[in-house]
Image (cartoon, rainbow, N blue to C red; front, side, top):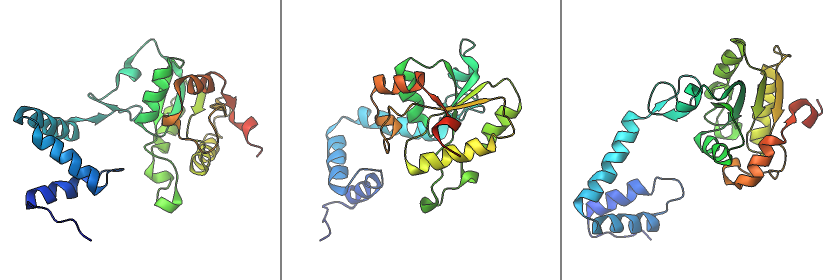
Length: 208
């Protein structure tokens, strides 16, 4: 049975909030009623932050990480090891790995992983730009730090094959201290940090 609302404005707001991942209509209603109880300044700041984020956020021209300028602070940091690139699915993995304080190289954010069932192919991801970075030279190691799922492994293998012309570059992957099927963002910092430090060569992890 459809929920009846005393206000069309309230119903419209619930409909929009319920489009967010993990937010059902009951949760959406609870959040909206909470906002309605706040003062105007708080709600105005909240809504303005969302609008500013949407229209002002940028993606790094180098690694595709979310940032405020054309190039992100990590790529600009001269103290980082520019010869190592850690390939991740999205910004959440960058944040998770940075929180371990175990990794000092650069990143490359794919923007997703290959998933035919969801209609996501290699052309939908930032794989070609990764190969372009590698082709410019100076890269000694590429770490594949994707989730240990079928889709993550498919993406790992695709990238590994695309890198075959660059046989002098070491291709490694995070140690399987991350359980099979786990998402990187949900791993605890100690386990994730050890997985980065104890990474293994890709061609030793998969018998090809």
